[in-house]
Image 1 (cartoon, rainbow, N blue to C red):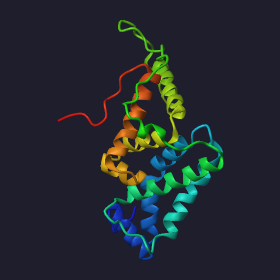
Image 2 (cartoon, rainbow, N blue to C red):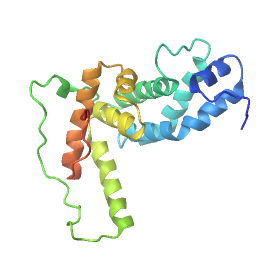
Image 3 (cartoon, rainbow, N blue to C red):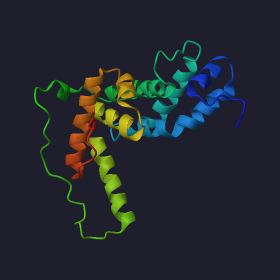
Image 4 (cartoon, rainbow, N blue to C red):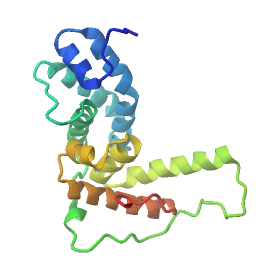
Length: 205
């Protein structure tokens, strides 16, 4: 690790644009795992074989944009995930996957229907923790894969990659309320699919 490098992502990107290759290595090391996970889960079962391609192409675009890159109010991480999101959506469209989001214009709040997951143990049961959570984790991945792509992206960026609602709206290039609505729909469908109530979105003081 180079102790002379700045720690801030935006400063690292500026250093890289100025010709410091070590700065890019630091950015790559810091963000490669969450970015790869996001791309893999966003592509889901529709385009799993394209995960490496989309991941590498995202970093190629970072390299190509280094000289003209400017934060414009967005953190480097938000910009990075925006690039990956665009590239993944292009890949899904080419595969024939539906990526539109009709639910956002619905006049009434979406109400889930269907069967909830029955794999949760009774309150008094003491299941093997590893086996149970492995099954629950796989169930969540299956539920995520069943979400419309636009909703899946919102959920992954907010709940898995930690983007704030403002950052989420920036990354998806949506208005704040639209991003919030998209995330609400995703959470409602995941609650139904998982048979459990996850933390509500946008609630609190």
